[in-house]
Length: 266
Ligand SMILES: C[S@@+](CC[C@H](N)C(=O)[O-])C[C@H]1O[C@@H](n2cnc3c(N)ncnc32)[C@H](O)[C@@H]1O
Image 1: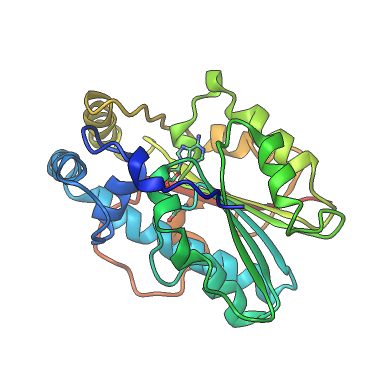
Image 2: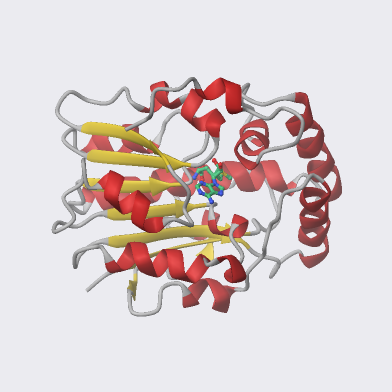
């Protein structure tokens, strides 16, 4: 499923990439000077909010995945996976349910280059990686069907992904196409950037990304909620990621400019 050609030859180190800038925010080592430069620029203009938001987002993924696995979900489709950062989603899911089946998807060759770390799961479960673009949901579904049994519930996570896909580029259509393929009892997990709390800082961050050639969109709470139309929003609804069933002590002060939510298909 991962393809055989060496991914490294496709890695462009001349311009920043979202997966690598995010890795830098998380303190990772799988990024290049061009990514670090943009990361430092954003951290300087947004008052240091971006690295804290990245950590809060990762902690949101941990809590949601654990909650869904504890609730009986055994299949996970994670689109926009990012560079491996322990614990990864499959490690959380399989720590609760060793037989959990996980398919990771990303379109960045750097993630493919590191996919080996994502494939070390439990012997009872399955973890697979597919190189694909979220804007081609049918290709994702076709590849995921080799591992996931779509007549049974799946947790579909698009975590810190949709702010890279504008509405005009099909953000709603891709979510609908994926959710339509899911069985009742499946869940949609989203997190994405908002300018609701710190509009000036977020606008500066968006401008810095744009100068690096990366398009970012911020969405209001109502715009995030619109992705869950037709689904039952689980408690506590659409909230900043650090306020979704918080379990850890607060990591610094001030708002986190990412909304997170989980919806269940009836
Ligand atoms: C900020 S990282 C989030 C990683 C992880 N989901 C998390 O929240 O910790 C966003 C990821 O989305 C990926 N991505 C962006 N646009 C994508 C697209 N159109 N199709 C697939 N992946 C995409 C990037 O390559 C990157 O790895």
